Length: 311
Image 1 (tube, rainbow, N blue to C red):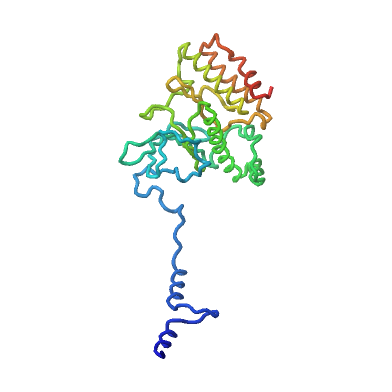
Image 2: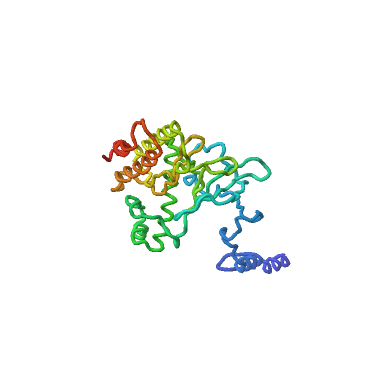
């Protein structure tokens, strides 16, 4: 028994009235001396991938930062997918748009996406942004004040507002059946959208780049009127509509570039934005020989104001 107690005393010590293993105390000291693991942000998101590729960012967006369900069959959401940047589609003052292929290596499962990346705060921000920001407020008073003062933090918040506003509008309009690209996901100030174009990566032309025949012109006008009526009934105006932010793909009209979408009720310039959209796009159709349609281009603004109930 005495030998047993001797071994016991050597293996255990007393501290703060509790028994503990000597080895355990030593182990705790070693753990405390270890260097902390780097944060997840410090790991290389492209580890093991060729330059220009990244692992799919699908799992980095929360459910509310993804497009409306049910997800379309063409969309690749598997986490084994890789995003490969194929080139730039469009440059702009506020954002650049890149062509991305999201596919599962070793399979034929893939889809083309348009990655719209808003510029950082040190670059030029959205033109005439003060008019569009009217009626947009967050619950954070500090953010609202910073946006109003255009501080550095405020400009960063505005960049996030543009991305968030466009994604929210696209989700809303897509669910309502309005012809817009399907919003795949948002991650920070990057929007991933359905690519509108052919399977070889050729983007659909803008309306301004087309020369439709009279019958085609009438069909596009009818599609446009129905889309704008749907917007107005939902209390929205595109805000910057022209023949340069409408695509034509296989005879179908698709509206794009909606970061400046206007809530025509909350924004005191809502009725004006509806009228300006109608005049801008109607002028293009009129110049290209549109005739014999109802409503006429010059009557579209009044129709939209009635549908939005702001007349």
